[in-house]
Length: 249
Ligand code: G
Ligand code: G
Ligand code: MN
Ligand code: NA
Image 1: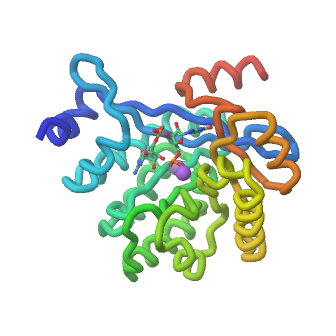
Image 2: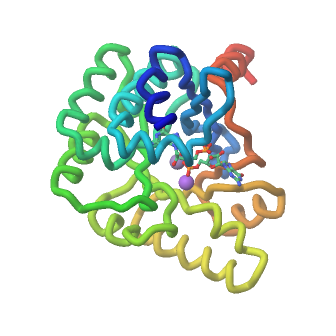
C-alpha cells in the first residue's frame, strides 16, 4: 500500500513534521501549553491528512517509530530551548502496549535534558481501548517520570467513563462537537453536565474547537480551565513559537 510504504521512509526523507497549536489558560489568557500535531507529505509535496495516515501507521506498527520521533522532536525543537512551558503529544494505545515504551521516553528525556513535567500525553478514547494491565502499568511509569496524562476527545467513544474510573487524568479534553452543539438549549445543557462530571472527579477541563467570540463567552460562563481552537490560534511551526518567545510577545 502507498501510505504504508511512505511511512517507512518518512523520517529519513523528512516527509514528516510537527505543527503546534496553542492552548490558553482562560483565567490568565496565557498560552500555557501547545499540542503537537503530526503532518505527512508525499514525495511530490502533497499533504496526507492524519485521518488517513495515523490508522495505517497503527495497523502496520509504524506508529511506534513515528511516535518516538515525535517525542524526540518536541523535546529538541521546543522544550530543550525553553520556548513553551508544556507540550502535549498524541499517543496511540499501540505505543502504550509496546514493551519498553516508558523506558524509551525516559531515554529521550535524559538525552535532551528535558523534565518530564513539561510533557503531556494525550490518549484518545475514540479508539478501541483495551483495559490492558500493560497499558495501565505503562501509564503509571509515565506518571512516575512526571509526564501528565490527558484524556482526548472525551465524549466521542465508548470507553470514556471506564477510563475516568481507572486513571487520574491531569486534564480531560472535551470533544469539540459538544461546544459546537451549544446553539440549542439541549446541547448547552449537555455540555454543562459533562463539565460537572469531569470537574467533580477532580480533573482540569479543556474545551476544544473554540472558533468564535460567542463560544469564548460560553467558556468563561462555564469557568472552563483551558481552551484550544482556531479562535485562540491555528497550528503553526516550531519556528513561530521561537520567534514569539524571543520577542517577548
Ligand atoms: O490537525 P489534525 O487534523 O491534525 O489532527 C487530527 C488527529 O490526528 C488528531 O486529533 C490526533 O488524534 C491525530 N494525530 C495528530 N498527530 C498525531 C500524532 O503525533 N500521533 C498520534 N497518535 N495521533 C496524532
Ligand atoms: O484532538 P485531536 O488531537 O483530535 O485535535 C486536533 C485536531 O483538531 C486537529 O486536526 C486540529 O486541526 C483540529 N482543530 C483545532 N482547533 C479547531 C477548531 O477550532 N475547529 C475545528 N473544526 N477543528 C480544530
Ligand atoms: Mn489531541
Ligand atoms: Na481531540
